[in-house]
Length: 259
Image (tube, helix red, strand yellow):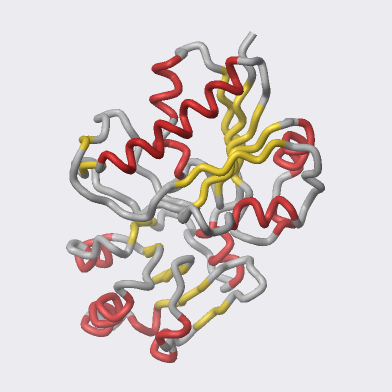
């Protein structure tokens, strides 16, 4: 009998935001797979879990997911291109280079080898597994190896919810419409800002100046709140985004525009 794979969202940073179900499963499984952005780096997801429970005696498998997108091997048309602990969001027509593909395949084989031995294991990811999550790079390929694999996704608190809560904002009321998008794709940002009542821009650190310019042009700057590293010890919240300096910009950042 093959083991069961749990894909667990560990929240945005505060270990107290781990769900009771996540903690229970992480206590039970003997093996945890941890995504990392750099081979020499550490895993934020793992650091959250370590603050919540003792991992002594568990096998920790580190999965290296390089942070880049390049041309090479075309992603499967069924593959969900996601982002969380390590990856930059790619469009559906993005090509994945051979090194990235090799890294993912290594992780797939490592995970499958444990499951094939009947070992239950967890794959942890920042925030919620269904929102820009690294795991969905692997999901289809695991099922190709064995369509009968038992994979359960455990939802987690997302940075979107956390940022809104920390800023005391309602994301929506009544018939208000919400748009959530990676800020790196700002080509249609003006159109999105016009059509939606609440707009959440994720990972704005590299394009913040461009976003600020667009908000100024549309007289929406006063409607925007910036939250960096929501739920973490070094969290920052700016109700006036004009006050943001370069040192305040961070990969784990969200801008919420509420019209």
